[in-house]
Image (cartoon, rainbow, N blue to C red; front, side, top):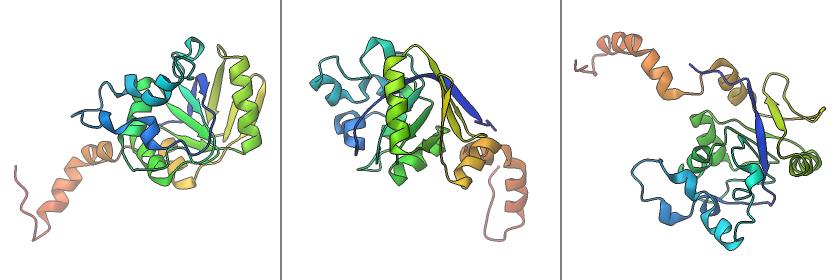
Length: 197
């Protein structure tokens, strides 16, 4: 199992409330068989409209690993392609005022922590990132804070999800594979399960 205690790296600030999954990855890109290649299309329409001025196109944010957003990020449809596209672009953690519940759940299932912070703290963090794009920040799930430039802000995450990251149990498929022997043993004792070998 893979524990996630801290995520450190450069960050990209993406301002605006209610950024939905249709904006994160437009529907025309959902026909893929795998999620490979989705990173190049993340925010495709927003990026096209802003002609290179979108944060995901600006050179100072290329290679960033943390995304700092505002309220109700990932709302709209429940498509898993949205967090997959963000992750394929290179994002390993998100900090925001709030996240849509299904988007949050999809991120947890992928091992991408989404933590929340107060609106004023996020605005201060986004402004600092914009002024210091080459500097790293650290999201610390043990201390429950984001550290940047000698400062920090408190963050929140439900204890269930936090414990899954800290304990390395966020990966449901990995847990099943790791417990294959016990699953087989239990299945042999169930009269209604015919385990094929």
